[in-house]
Length: 115
Length: 114
Image (cartoon, rainbow over all chains, first blue to last red; front, side, top):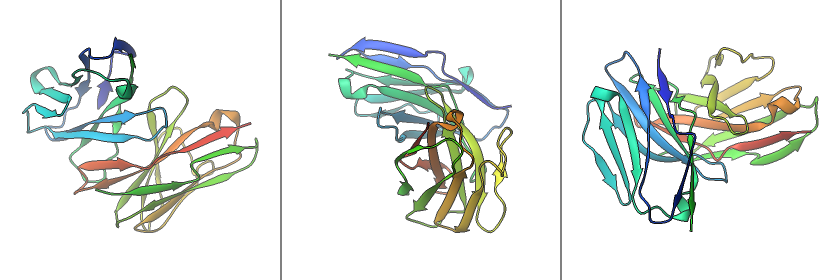
């Protein structure tokens, strides 16, 4: 069975702090895709990143970075120098190789950044 | 990428009524997905809609309660029937693009049942 675990329910930081959101996944498939989405209070889901199981390179996009480690089945997300606008719920999700396979979501981590 | 539009964005509905949510995509897609997000919860898949065939429902969701139409490759509707306060949720439409490897969401439809 596939599963995504986001153990951190809520995180509160002060602006300019770095913060890491954890994501641990379970799957028996050798090919899969991992995602991170941001859901601001307005409710829409904003796509942040997709990573396939064969690419373990870490990725950096501005203040965002992702650390994918197959050995620990983790796909953690770090925000550097957090800002108030980063306040949102962040979801990690998993899907299998087949085109059109639906996402399996973690329960989400609520990040609150105060000024 | 795919641009997905959902209507309505928000609505307040009376108990016992039904509401149809529309999802329009700017490109042809094979699969469309409908998710529900209850207040403070994660997203749960309701059903997968493939053009030209009956939707496939996940455990806990039935066609009588959530009938889905998929008349063409760019459009789908989800109806929430005989609504109760427990149906108050965000309903999101989603499509797989780029060979199924990137998944996009609409803005969501916030339903409040009173």
